[in-house]
Amino acid sequence: MDLLARDARTLWHPYTQHGLDPQPLAVVGAKGAWLQLADGARKLDAISSWWSCLHGHAEPRIVAAIAAQAAALDHVLFAGCTHEPAVALAEELLALAPRQAGRPALARVFYSDDGSTAVESALKMAIGAWVRRGETARTTLIALEGAYHGDTFGAMSAGDPTPFFREFGPFLFHVVRVPPEAEALEAALKAQSGRVAGMIVEPLVQGAAGMRMHSEAFLREARRLCDAHDTLLIADEVMTFGRTGSVTACERAGIAPDLLCLAKGLSGGTLPLAATLATEEIFDAFRSEERSRAFFHGHTFTGNPIACAAARASLALMREHQVPARLDAIGSRIESALAPLREDARVRELRRCGGIVALELEAADPGYLAGLGERLRTACRAQPEVLLRPLGNVLYALPPACMSDVEADQVADAISAVARSA
Image 1 (cartoon, helix red, strand yellow):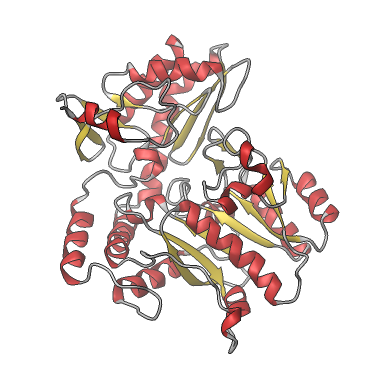
Image 2: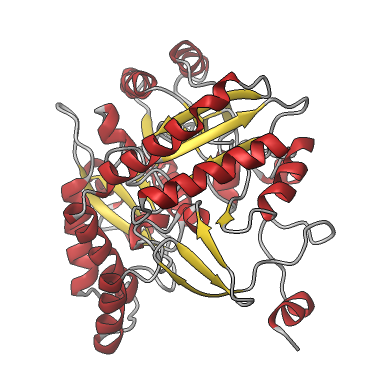
């Protein structure tokens, strides 16, 4: 029995409607920007395998770091133990974390497994810190309209329930949603005065919402308003890490959050690893001689040494190859190639932030479940050499940093072809 037949009998794939979607791609290998399929064909990975593959597949230095670490120390529990890869990675992350004059620096690193658990950790830290200070009324969160922060229950609460989480509404905590506008945020903070634990934001780019983009000026206003209303600012940089033209989107805006969530490209997209960075003030809210005040949260593979070693190799590559700048150049090339589509009446907007390029098409029912989305999916699957996965009525490119100019042109050609055919 071949791989696809065995898959069809045994597996349940994420974000897949098994009553509609065709067979998945049977992938047997990957190198650089390319996926090797079982039938001998190749696909250019234009979306970095769900936004995680930062440098390219099978990057030799990351592979070597994984192998060396696996031979030395594969895993040990992180409650009551520590190890060099975790400590060294934490030092590196804190050194590159965004800074802002007059604000406390991010000073502590809590490891988990993926973007959702990084956000879950941040939310529990934010609410728990207020509780430990005696402010038990601070249980409300402010988030952006169209937000997506993951699929665990806290992360679902922070995300916009439409279209993913509506049936879980009775189990989610209170969130006030605002557009990325300073006036709306200020009004929400005033209306919820004394009850807000924090504001969470995907800085500059809201990924699952269709690569929606907002300004650096809004982020600066969000930071200012959170300070004015004594509210924590949580930056979910799970997707934006290294992708917006700087190491973090917060750095590009010149702000520092109180909590910073990282995952996806943190390990170069090779292994599950996430980190939540916190200020010393938040950490100190949990430090006590009373065991009951501890941060009761953890994961079996917290601080996994192999994943930490992969992340250290990835960060070294980011520095040496100037990955944020390289991705910015790739994004600029793709955007320029798609620029003629701005004149097409079917195109609502072409937008870019760093290496992220999005082409939004006009649709009667825009959004993730847009009817046009099914036609775009079909057209994307028909592309013989480029892997694209639309977000409703939005086509996008989010390439790895190893992508050549020729490959970037292929991605632009594929997006243009899909847009015109659909």
